[in-house]
Length: 465
Image 1 (cartoon, one colour):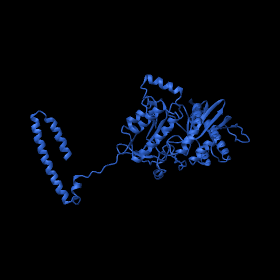
Image 2 (cartoon, rainbow, N blue to C red; image 1 turned 135 degrees about the vertical axis):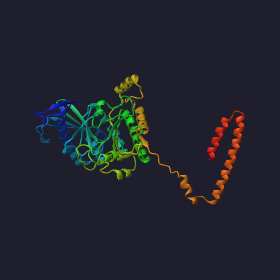
Image 3 (cartoon, rainbow, N blue to C red; image 1 turned 90 degrees about the vertical axis):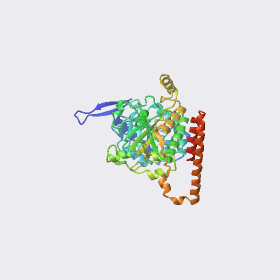
Image 4 (cartoon, rainbow, N blue to C red; image 1 turned 60 degrees about the vertical axis):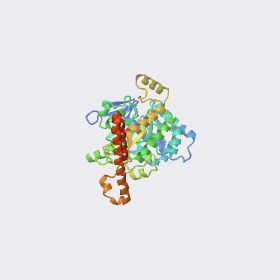
């Protein structure tokens, strides 16, 4: 879907490798995205606020942007293109729900250059990140865009009931048409902030079939590992306090139930791990940028960080979400290394339709049917949750205080004189009982049953002690 080409006018400083997507260069695509969103969102502000109606989910607005400009659109140096906006009023409602003002949305997407990200997956999609770290723009296939549009009424209902979710937050769905080519885009929340260095990054499905990062992926400076890699590298899992663990699992269970109701499967948990101790050894701080050295502006989007997204009353999130942690969830390894965890469910635009059923049936004939990633939604959700709760996330057990003998004997006031007398009498009775059991053991040995009584005596002594 996407390729890399050499562009330049000669000389070592003018040659650059630029990706193309459907025969459109990345620079032209970024320019068209910013022009189209700038026009449509700006135009939407003139429309009055009102309740979202069912027909709003299926509205498609279109505008033509010629390179020479028009009475409504500015001139530009890209090829002529048409820009389509899907369900503009519905997505405006979603943005309002997360506290995204139109001016902030425009500033993030239009005023600053978009940053192209490396795609570790096999989809061939292009990913762009806004300079303030808030939004991701991803190219999607026609069937994915169509599925999202059908999903919008249910998505609207779910967000109204539960804005705290690890599911993707969708803020816009667009299409660029130029030269007979359609490029569809979705704008959503950014799960892994650039300002925090991710020492480990995982794409987890709860599957074992071919779920190991390739050699090419491992050679990258920040590879994205998979399920089998996680089991090798974090065999004991990641530990959270009881409240955080319960909130996290409650959120995952609720989200998986929603995905199952929509017959969605093959989604992943994107997991970023920042090791605080390692960061300190490297001389960095949690909030230092891991990429271009620029600190992003303070977070503006509600419920967008990992800590805010998990279930709870939000008080803990408000107390711990700072510019330094960027909303990471505190965790530890089994060696007590301090961590910050960033996570979110991604790739939810896969419906268990006929082609997926065929894919699972074919793989099940060759491999273990329960281990492959493509599966019916109910089983997929159960396996996903079992893997997350049993292999990935663990609950720290509270330490139980057990006073030593020295502690107990150093506080004589705790024992009254009557208790001491009762204790000495109990000791005398225990000695008599042991003597009787010893005699019984000797007699039983003559009958060849000493072993049974010996184990019985050992049990009795342990009980009395």
